[in-house]
Length: 230
Image (tube, rainbow, N blue to C red; front, top):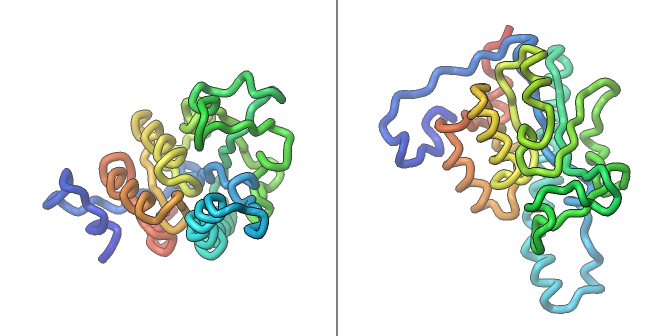
């Protein structure tokens, strides 16, 4: 089954197949979202108590997906885009102030999203396997959406970008928020499903079903790279 018929929610049950997106040089870019060192850090399981080990084990499938599928897929996309002369851009979570006073409220509340990632610390940097090349654009945000918290919309508009291909983490959080913002600003959006990951595969798949055909087209890297382009 192709991307045109997979992951259809009740809203698009029976709807016509979507047209292939147009991938035009100078009008398409790859946006890699929040693949940062902090999210690949893991404690030594030998140092954990029973509850800590339970949480460690719960996150193991995510880390396996990141190393075995998500990061290699994004690296492949980056190579393909660069080879075609298409732009590769990055978004990352990082605060400007060491104490994090400039963070959005969602990144100050207790819990999963309580992040303190000063911009110059190692934890906030993009993982080495996906290192930006000199001159590639990196936007820094303290929000989930890469549009809401940065000047990315202006950058894309100034560059004539109309189609944004999204990959990164987490599918149901920053990827989803960015996709929705892009769609609301009338960009065509593609999400590369094997270039994304969520805390669990169930969350990943559910969010892709929610996003597909409403806010973006969801497809695999193989399907994206096989599309006609100019």
